[in-house]
Length: 166
Image: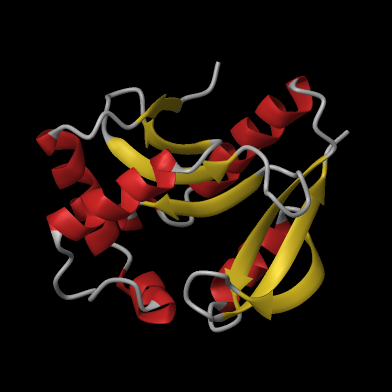
């Protein structure tokens, strides 16, 4: 049994406050992404962004909690990308207090197991080119670069990565 649980966000005020706290522990990511001011994460904007992710057909926002119920991560997923049909990870964010402790690896493993059970043959994601730490993380987990392009929403240069599932 995994020491982590995944559950869909319910958008309660308490959950949004927890997610704002999680976002605030990742200022380097937000500087690279440019979507939020790392010094002032606004709850209303976080909620609006996550509601938009969840509203996309096949979109899902999951909260990762440890055995004590503490929020340790967040995942935004897309079940089938409209272009390639693969599931995509839109965002995997681990609470800053838990970086380099295996949480990201465990979350990725849970997703790989899930999609393997569904007989999916691979998962994809895009890493911002200006986020070399993320590229190192995903590469270490066996993900491979398959393309370079700008993201659809913000026009940022990205590295598209694919993980083949068995």
